[in-house]
Each structure stands twice: as C-alpha cells, then as structure tokens.
Length: 141
Figure (cartoon, one colour):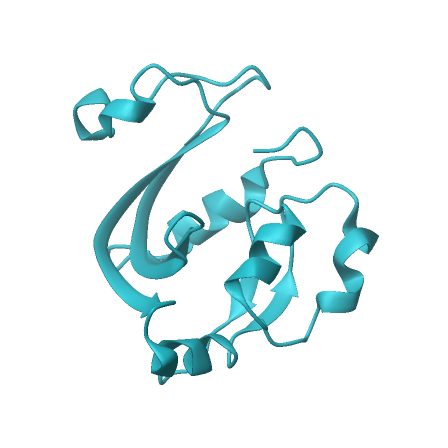
C-alpha cells in the first residue's frame, strides 16, 4: 500500500463474511506484465497496527513476500488469467470494465472523475497509483 492509502477493514471483512460459498470473485492486476487475473478471496488477515504483520500462512506465501510485513494479507484460490495485454481481443474486454470506487484511497476526490468511466488502458491503472479498485465487470469477462 502507498502511504496515502488505508486498509478498508470493514469492506474486506464484509466481503469475506458475505460469501459462504467459498470466496468472493476479485481480480489481481499484474502491473509488470499487464495482465488481469480472476481470483477467489476466501480469507483476509488485517494487521492491528499500521506497521503491518508477517504472513499468517508462511507456507502458502510466495518466497519474495515471506519476510515482508503487510497491513493486510489475502488468501486467494482459483487464480485464472482473464486478460492479457498481448491479446487485442482482451484489450477490448478491458475497456468494458468500469471504475466504481477507490476504497483504499484516503483522498477520495482525487479520482472522482474516473468513477463510472470505463478503463482505457493498463497504463491508466498504473498512473492512478491506487492499490485497490472497486470495479464493475461485465458477465462476458
């Protein structure tokens, strides 16, 4: 998370609790490869302090994160690639996704102009410097 962001504790806990069928569908954005993955969030652990905490599941944590303290840890399953910037048809699908909100961003008005608008590119996502987006995804994705 960036220094200007907060962990939306209540929202994350609500997502996990509301889903009794094994997880909420979410998306991960790979900013290095410009890819979007569909995942299921089955659990979240939130640090009691802003200094963060170690992973609650070291054995399931990627090696490059084992020694990192984070303010929130997510348990994700069913990770599937859904959009790849190298596929033109996938880029058309990206443009169908709409921004709804930016729940981790502390200064809400910074991104107000984007609310309700379609994503134009992966580069646009990078420029926003936001860690967590609330998006509207069409069924055909």
